Length: 306
Ligand code: NDP
Ligand code: OXD
Image (tube, rainbow, N blue to C red; front, side, top):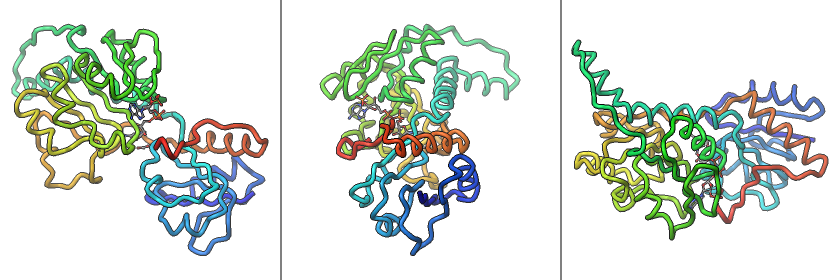
C-alpha cells in the first residue's frame, strides 16, 4: 500500500515518520510533482496539481475537521474524503469557548483594566440565566462545547441541520427554527462547517436577533461572518463584543479594524490545533479498517458540504 503526504504549511517529515511507525507495512513518502500513483493521501490544503496527478486515490485524509477548502478543488472521482473526528480538538475547543464565555460573563476585561489603574472595585454579579448560550453546529465539536458550558450552569441552546437531542440542551433544527434559536440566545458560538448554506450566516439580520447586548464567539470559519456587519453592531451596543478565531483573510491583515477594536478579541485560528500524535493514530486506524473492508467514521458527504 502506498501513501502520499501533501501538507501545505506543515513540514511533512515528522508526519511521515509517525505514519511509518503506525503503518510499518506501508510505503509512505512526501508528494512531489510527478510522484507515482498512491492508494491513500494525507493532506492539508493540497494544490489542484496534486489531485490532478493522483486520480486513482481511494481515500484522502484531511488532517483537520473542516473540508471547505478541499471541496473547492476537483477531487478524484472515486476517492473518499475523510475528515478528522475530534482527534484532541474537541477538548481544546471546549477550553477556548468556555474561556471566552467566562471572560465575557465575569467581565474579566473590565477588572483587568481597573487593575492596570490600581483600582480596587467590584462589578455587580450577573445571572447565568440571563446569558443563554446558543451553539450553532451540534456536531463533534459543538456537542463537546455544549457539555462543557453546561458544567458552568449556563442555559444552552443548540442548532443543527437535523435534530440532535442532547440532554439538557434546548434543541433547534433547520432554517425554520433559526430565528427562534437566535432569539433564545445571548452568547452565540459558531461551530458550523462552511458550506453554501452557512456562508455569511453571521450577519446584521441574524446577529440582531440575539438578545440585546449579545456576544459572538466565532471559532468555525471566517466565511461564516459578514465582517463589515460586526463593528457597527458592536458600536451601537446591539452586540457587546466578539471573540473571533477565524477570518475571511488569514493571517488577518495588519490594517483590519478587528485588531484594534476594544471589544473584539482576535486569536490566530488557534482555538483547536491539529495534534499530530492523535491525528496520525486516527488516520492509521481508519486505513487499517479500510484494508479490512470495514466502514469508517468521518467520510465527508460532498453534496451536503461536510
Ligand atoms: P461536524 O460535521 O461534526 O458538525 C457540524 C454540525 O453543523 C452538525 O451538527 C450539522 O448538523 C451542523 N450543520 C451543518 N450544516 C448546517 C446547516 N445548514 N444548518 C444548521 N446546522 C448545520 O463538524 P465539527 O464539529 O467536527 O467541526 C465544525 C467546524 O469547526 C469544522 O467544519 C471547521 O470549519 C471548524 N473548526 C475550526 C477549528 C479552529 O481551529 N478554529 C478547528 C476545527 C474545526 P447535523 O448534526 O444535522 O449534521
Ligand atoms: C480544522 C481547523 O478544520 O483546524 O481542523 O480549522
